[in-house]
Image (cartoon, rainbow, N blue to C red):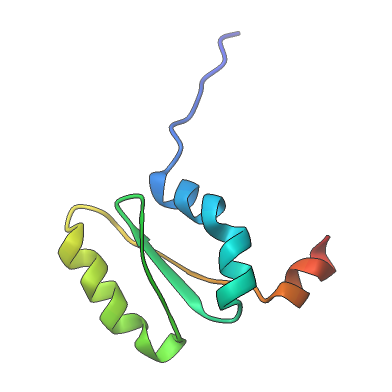
Amino acid sequence: MKSVRMAKDPNHACFTKHLQKLVKTHGGKWVVIAGGSLIGVASEGELKKLTALARKRHPKDIPLIAPIPRKEDVECIL
């Protein structure tokens, strides 16, 4: 049987690459990533503005919008 390799989503790859730093510096906030690039970090109330910026910069991409876990949340999982 042939192994099928799935293409990695660039937005998720960016999130994974920067997750440790995001948890350390911005835990409890939200991250917006589009086009494989970090667009910004915001509180939940500021997400609409940041999402609009992501769509303007990368109109053909669906932005990744995700909560950033707090350091203590990550430590509990591990």
